[in-house]
Length: 448
Image (cartoon, rainbow, N blue to C red; front, side, top):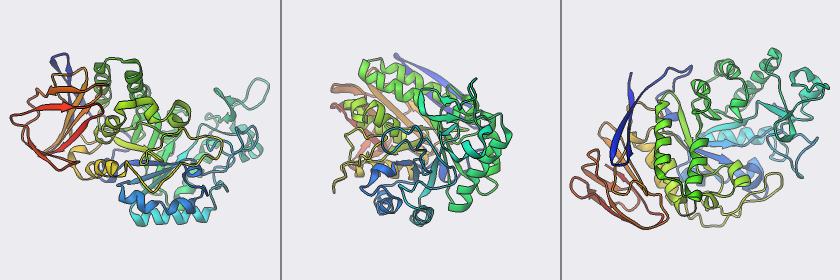
């Protein structure tokens, strides 16, 4: 069985970590999942109209930017009872097999999916299996599908007044949920699901659901859980969130924590192996609305963090508006359109990174033929440097993770030979000279 090898710089020494793959229920195929990226679409805030038809017009632009997979936040109708704000949360469903009229019709969605497929995209939709809104159709037709409090009332989800939790001990409910998921695959030909709060649902449901739904076609499954905390879920899902990394990296920047702690965390993630992947991101719908924009969280290292997300082992995940960049927190329960301009300042930046991710075998996610090495530098407390290798293909990434300029050199035998900077095309021979002079926010990516 092939191995992933990670060398982590600790102080001036090198520690070798070797991890074996573990067999999962649905091993990643050798196709598109290894090379893809994901773009989260907030339909409500994407355009003035907030519809599928309006978003459809944006897809050629996203294709040219190198986007491969479109993830749509929940498209189901929103429950009105106990809803938050004037529009409510997309994550409080009123019906699992209907379309939110705010966005358009089922035919509008099907047309958009067909057009996305014609352009070469894959399409996944948000699936909220843990809970529904208070007036979901099941509350009337199948109240036994829900958890109940001692007084017989529906059980509110923890800390959230607008949603109530389903009872996964009810086998009939499980089958109804699986049938609802099948509906979207059969009816609209989507390519997978992003499963909201996946670890709040018993893992054996996902073990039951995935093979049943995939009797229709193979799908991509992205779960909202961190595999370091819920390893059993990683045996079902193709990719998972990297919540610990996201929180730790934000604390690193805001609280001036040691960079070595981030490197140690990367070793932990790598020890999981390649039977599943991590999704790496600097923002998403939750983070932007509740905890601040990526620039609020990461300041001077926002761009280096974005480079990391696109080049480390896994799947890069972008959120609506990052190509602008979007500098505001978007309202969650109200209409709050992204302030688009005719200028997309970060589009070429992302295009360069995403095209490299797609084309270079050294950046394949979840592939045991790829080895990732953290490189030793003379500024290990400020610089994150790594090289990824797959046969003759190599990609070198060097990031200034500090708040100050840094002059340093790489002192590591894993780096040698001729490379080309993917952003400016300049060539460099690292056999001899490995010195760098970085300004604040600097980063480089080289392709061998």
